[in-house]
Length: 105
Image (cartoon, rainbow, N blue to C red; front, side, top):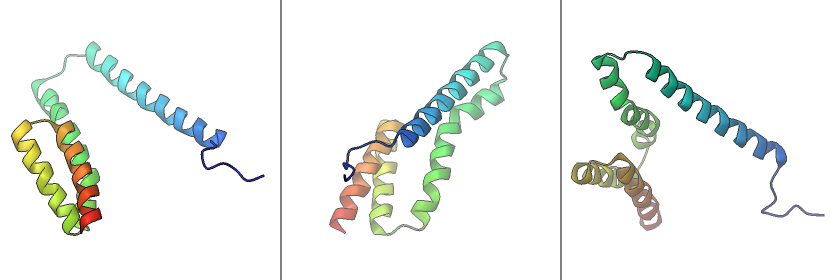
């Protein structure tokens, strides 16, 4: 009997659920730890720019090895970020733009 294309491997589902649990525990644990300690302005400033730094670290190598579609999408991200100051909206615009540009180019 052939496996359905939509069938789920219990091991894969278990691994995904475990990763989700670890992610949630890390976030909740970090928030709890920060709520129990007095954080300096310098640490607070560092934590505020951390999401952007993580995004750059993950996407920088992809952009460096990318072609015209990726560079054009990066331009859309910069433009969206400049106009809206929303990281989430800029990332969504970038994902949509790279998919569109890869289909066209």
